Image 1 (cartoon, rainbow, N blue to C red):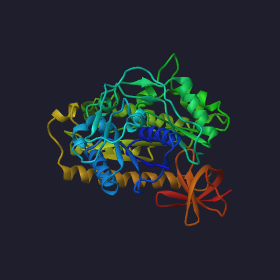
Image 2: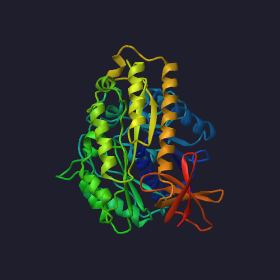
Image 3: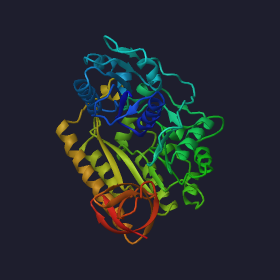
Image 4: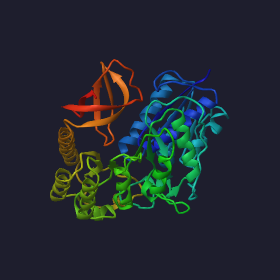
Length: 428
């Protein structure tokens, strides 16, 4: 049996698409092996959100080719869309395929190896879409990602993704429900909604509310989690769903702030002010008891002063946010920020990033400490050293000892002690 490996960089949307490709590979007769093991085919699903992501993609491609010189190597996704020429210089790459055709990669693989890299980088459609998925294969024992939307029209001045992914478009409603049913039938108890800008989903009068309500009707689906969503696209009615005991939507949101300075937010072309963002975060915190709210923050944007950075630190520290993913500004060709002056030195960016990560870790500790003594439902995923780990509805990472096999099992857990970035508990 031929062996294939899929390696995914970047966001949950990439993870969702890679999962679909893995099912197509199984359906085509491949045995899937972990990346790093010998394989006849590698598909590297790339990210291009930063220079570091580009470099990591190239490194992984070279690593596979070096260990598997006779194998077929396909590079797909966002970096393939934006950096095809750089990838083509890597000896041994057979196929470079952008986002328009990435899910059809096997059609190109079947034609056999190429003497030089074949580049398929079609213009990305603006049409709404369906996804063909193979839904009768391997059982699932972890949370599953569900792609509901692609592309973005917001055009933030630092972001290359609208160029890599195209304009905003929605997945057919019945098609996404069909895949969700398939995921649940195969064992998924929690589905995470993914996309580039999922709050802008709109098709035939349906939006994000109709998606979560439609998913809740699926027997066996216990939990629905919304991944990253823009603050200006969140309907307040979601709070009612989170509070309803018979609704599967979890009390959790990941809302990118990017900066806590109005001056920087304006330069970034974000669609809200500092005050509007914080007002909404506090509103969500007050409306949904125990909600977990995370964020993204970009440090070192051109022109970011010490005072601007202090505003961002202040916003993170004083708000109900319980963590922030911190990213360093990275110039992306074609974006408006490339032309901006007053670039922040790399050393300053690194220092600011380190400080924000420390603040984020402290906010996580405080959030976790506040929950000690409470009992929560935890969906367990894996075991290590006698402890099973999983997540509560508000995305608190929990570990509990048990001799049982708790894979993909939801149990009540009494939260007892903060240990690093997780909480130790006892099965109730």
